[in-house]
Amino acid sequence: MKKTAWILSFLIPFQWLFLNRIKNHPDWIELYYSQKIYPLIFDSQRLFFQHVPISLGDIIYAVLLILVIWSLIQLIQKKLKLKTALLYVFASASVFSGLFYLNWGLNYHRIPLHEKLNYDLIYNEAELEITVEKLIAKSNLLHDRINNSDTLAVTIPYSKTEILDLVEKEFDFNLFDFQVTPFAKNSLWSTPLSYMGYAGYLNPFTLEAQVNSKIPKLTYITTTAHEMAHQLGIASESEANFVAYYTISKHSDPFLQYSGAVFALRYCYSELYKANPEAAQKQLSKLNPGIIQNFRELSAFWKKFQNPLEPYLKKGYDSYLKANGQAMGIQSYNAMVAMLIAYSKKNP
Image (cartoon, rainbow, N blue to C red):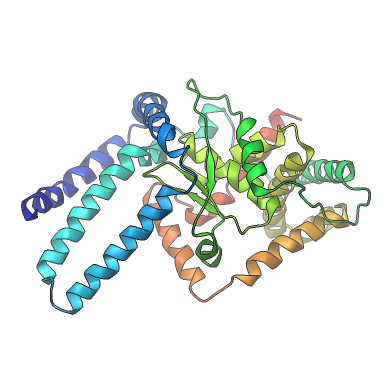
């Protein structure tokens, strides 16, 4: 056992050297890994994990957490030597790092989606304001189509199980040469996720798209699409956000279309407000009061789960994203605004 642990620990620098070599060749990763190897990995795992009703990835994480706690207790009670404990830590890190990058993580270093779409990500304030105006008009139109009154918030009439089915059946993003069928599950740890400030995540080891079942249905829709986008091998958070908007806005159901429109509007309005609060407030005055009610409901939900640990957890995730090539860290989610503007200019 110790011999195996030593071998695994010894492999860490070689993994690091390989990663630093390969990430400088996104064309290799795109052609050989993301387009050929990864689809095979995903399809083989989907055949098993999709038909298991509960999240096996969540269970695996729980077992690992128990093992860590047990090891710490053994260390404190001096039943486990520090040297041995460190050896197993490095061996475990080697295993999980290797599995992470081979199973999914190399997608962080593929050719960026905006390059494949030939999108120019440079925009000015005027273009941002035009995009906000378009999204407000689209959101108002869908709101009027759904509700009899512009002052009433939209209530999604579907259960969350029905939403998963609706998103999956019409999840269409045909940019890639390969075709995979994404799927999503409710996370077993939705309450802890809420306190951590997360709406969902992709388990990179089981490739299950996990959705926080506690979040309001309006964001549950786009979160499901966001995590399914990760299953396509789209690792970037901004790109996954864009794909979520793109797929949901093309859905046949008006409630899902509405969710996609207000999702994009929130991000674009936030960026406009940072650049020009006065212009942002002027645009907001055009928005149906019922949509603002929906925004307030979303804010009220997250406010319930605010806690002192959340900023530290977010900081940890920020570091994780930066370590995997997303220089903006947690702000990468907001970077989808540039893609929305480029998409809007190409699809007036």
